[in-house]
Amino acid sequence: MRLFIFLFGISFLVVTGSATAIYLIESPNEDAQITNLLDAFWWASATVTTVGYGDVVPVTEIGRIIGIGLMFVGIAIIGTFISAFGAMLIGWRIKKQETLEKSTKSFIIKKIRDIENLEKHEVELLISMVKDLHDEVKTNHN
Image (cartoon, rainbow, N blue to C red; front, top):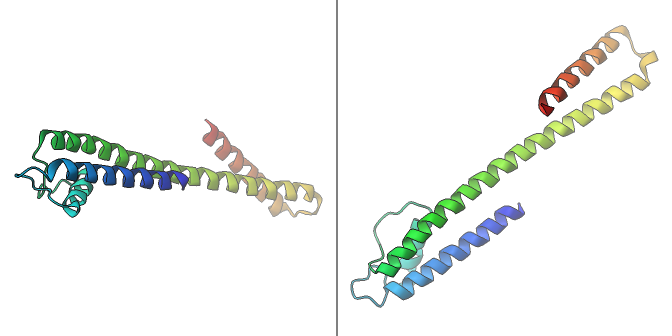
């Protein structure tokens, strides 16, 4: 979760910094399409998300260079978000699997300690659970 907060913070700084820079560079130009901060934030948001509507675009060379940089940064940010989200989902699944294995092991240990009081079908179930757990753990660790 801290990673997502960090990424949102970086994204905010990138968009804010780019919008401010593009406004300062473009607005003095007489042919500028980006003439106010709202246009600048609109352009920066559309560019960083790789939507690129094209309704407002930089007209100066420096503005276009900033745009190119922002496009690459946007792709990197989106890629990082997707990777972090995928890693989080995989981590949850691994943790869930480990929790399930631990609870199964605890159950088996409890039953083994009380083995003399188990009925035949409970012993067969216990043997089956041990085999299944063994196969699962062996598969997951290979």
